Amino acid sequence: MRVLVYGSELSTATAAAALSSVGHEVKWLPHDDAPWTTLAGEDWLRREPQLAAQIQEAQESGALEVVTELDARMAFDVLWLALSPAQRESAAALLQDSRLTRQPDCVLVNNSTFPVGDTERLQHLLGEQALSAALPDTLEEGRAWASFTRPTRWLLGCDDPRAEQKLRELLRAFNRRRDAFQVMPQRAAELTKLAINGMLATRISYMNEIAGLADTLGVDVEHVRQGMGADSRIGYEYLYPGCGFGGPSFSRDLMRLADVQVASGRQSALLEHVLDINEQKKETLFRKLWAHYGGALAGKTIAIWGGAFKPGTARIDHAPVLTLLNALWAQGVHVKLHDPAATPALRAAVGPRDDLVTFVDSPYAACDNAHALMLVTEWKTYWNPDWQRLASQLGDKLILDGRNIYDPDFVASCGLQYRGIGRRADPTSL
Image (cartoon, rainbow, N blue to C red):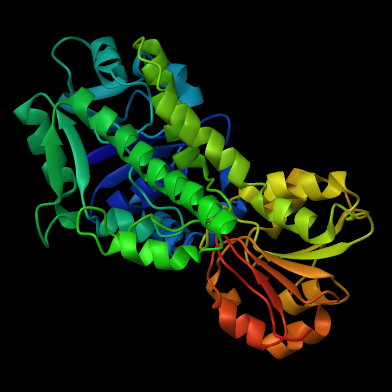
């Protein structure tokens, strides 16, 4: 099929690369906010596993062509929109562009996170007889290629069997192991995507509330988590307490769901509380540090491991580390930070702040002459450090584990003080 993919999101780049890899003829029109000359140099795109290589391979083969504008001589079977929420009107402008040439049975695919009902709105711009489908973006950052080409599910919102047939054919190469399509009306698919992320965020925030209570009561929250997860009605997924979640898609979906609630006249106190808890948890490591030193933080040097909002990505959108850095700097703390991928994004975000932060090339370099270590992003490279080396490096032998990836008793046995989220341990002798 001939496909026009429009946008500059991770979902756009992944769709363009994946569809062109299985025989479709794909034209990719990046959004003006991030043209290809900018996208090609983006660190998040280059570091997304397999994606940059797949894009290059598809371009070299001729299956994928990046274009800068529409050409009336191009005719498309599928219009694939993958835009940010702020680019809604760009989608409308494209569909009304006189240079856009469609085949009679062309299908509009809305892969963007727009308000519920926007797929219908966009379809009407093409005419009452146009075919459309909502295919909400369910990619996982850090494994976008894998989640597109080997999906666990597609949320397919279709109100016309012809559109469903066309979409099934378009994605047939990625739907062979089992039928991954969950077909439902368009509005239902759009709301389902938002509702899923709302539920996941609620689980995380609830677990963080329990971790705070466990801290107060002197209970190891890991025992509580294991007990809750073993209940078949609950399960273990997204039941890990931590120092807050972030990310462009997850955060935007929650805000979009909140907007939908307000627009419908059904404002959600639950969702507002979930968002509030998450923002508070982004400061939890700072509060633990403050308590440990009795507020005397001026002049301290703190090592931070991890700045990306999650392992496997170079992005820092809404990442907890941003809130944490501001809180530390306000108290006169100098930070030494290491991240395997997100350092360029962090440098760009914080600007020239050499007096407040030093970016280093290795985890142990961050700990040299530091008083304490904060683990913020659970990259695999941080899971099994040399504890004896850390004990010799950290002046106050303090570990603040924002993801509960370490064994408190083992860390304490190495002569370090451990403070996690709802967990703690002290060495018998310091």
